Image (cartoon, rainbow over all chains, first blue to last red; front, side):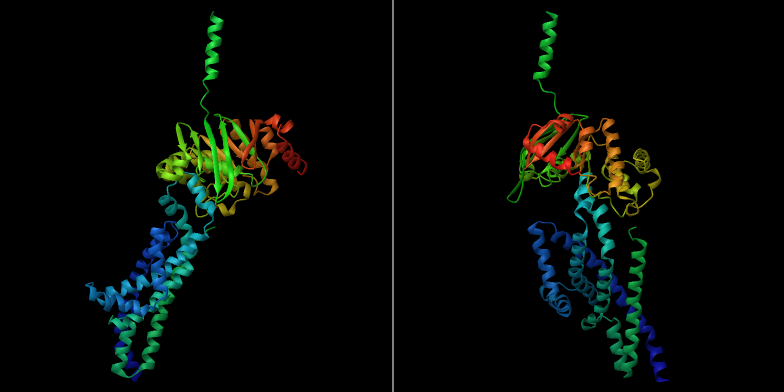
Length: 216
Length: 271
């Protein structure tokens, strides 16, 4: 009986916290795609001035814990005058973190496109930007959907780290519910189930996308 | 008096060389410390079909690729239509992107491995250049694609995906894609080498048809029958140089250069 009461009492709050985590995830994914694409293009540009900062970014992010990156953004940056709300700091931190991995995925995708694809587009008179947009990226996108899905799911799960910077997402909310009810088993299982629903939604969408745009 | 006057006028015309349609002068290209082309010069007239033959690694494909700047030689000059390009300038000062594009729009290229864009249908492949590069509107580009696909005998495949076509069909689509740009020159880079033997004929027939219609063509090929019967001249490339160039019949029947003779002996007796 207690279980039923506490879950029903806190369920709306948990759902709201889950939705917040999902929103942060979607925004962070968008940011990571922009960053990842730009970084991959810079790294493969053959121009050292562009490749160096891109390489540093990937090296730094991959070599440091996500929690430290989040702390640098939320607690560290205010010291040099850059202040963000927990929500914005969370999106920026997760987006930056994921962007480095997306960059590597995109770079692998670019390298998987046969040289002949670039050459036939150049031979027809396409300028680099047009060639990238019309010929290369549409093929890269199809290749990288599975690894990008993994990365999106990682980002979603990483939103739980934002509990450390007071973002009232699912993990922090769950902890508060447990503090009030002393029912860790019920609530952590509940939280896990909600995370599962969200990650399943993401991978379902990816599967649909892959089917929709597969190459015949 | 009249006679002499006419003669001198004719002489004047001969002395004043007719501008070649395409002219490569002193082209040299190295990849790292491996020299691939050594001071190659070649002039092609409008409407002429020139086959380029030679052993693999002799530099004949590189020569072709220098013409539309898929490779940039370290030195030499290219003249095509009204345009002269100094390759050293391209290497050094970086030619403007727009100039690359303008040159390439007028030169069609067909590759050994077809290189169709797999995420687009046949229609998409053939209209992509006209729409995106030339700025044609969709209906116009569609009409052009339909006409060209009819010409290459693939009207019924217009909405097919490249991956569902045979090699010969893919290569004919690749030719259609190049023709849709209305090029003034077509480059063929060993376009039948990746085909199953039974599909070589349909591609060569199409190329012969183009030649008959007066298309200017530069054809790197191992098809000696095509070189002999369709091209006007044959150039034999050996170790980065054009070792011999001459009328197709004479090159095949009576080559002067011992290297040409050796090469032809090899390829003709093994096929």
